[in-house]
Length: 223
Image (cartoon, rainbow, N blue to C red; front, top):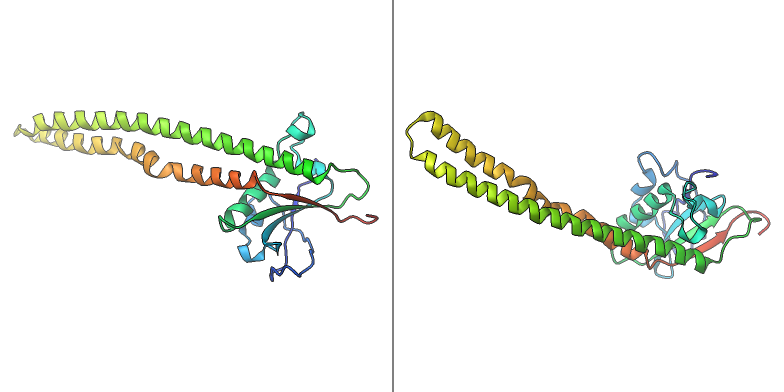
């Protein structure tokens, strides 16, 4: 790729009357510093918050290792991380719009509608993948929970027999079985109660991005 896509750094005011002055972050890779902007730093135009990216050419938005045709290519990982990160730090119900500032004024670019359909289709695919991962996680959680409950029941049953003994060693084993049974329940409960939330939230973000409009702005000289 000709370089890393650069996220625009909009004015702090966020006023709709403030002209676009795309700046440059120090990069989208590494620690993802572009994702740490507070929501008030995103410009709002027409009731939507703008996610702005500076590109030398539109090709920078693509994964150059992907040999697929234009409309089937994956997004560049840095660009995807920035777009998803921006969408997640903005309010969930805030309308979004992706603005691509392209400096190359000579090379022809596809129509914005075509680019929008490609980006929306990509995030729709990512939403489906997240939904599939969530289903698999729930399936694994149910199996793990069933195994954990069965193991806990066996431990409690065996512990009941051992508690009748006055042998200190057997009493120690009985208490160890109680601990082991509940420890075996930790991971299944972790999946069922907590692990699915991030995937669900990610899926909701992809769903939002799958309907996000796209605008292309030529910023190079000689437009």
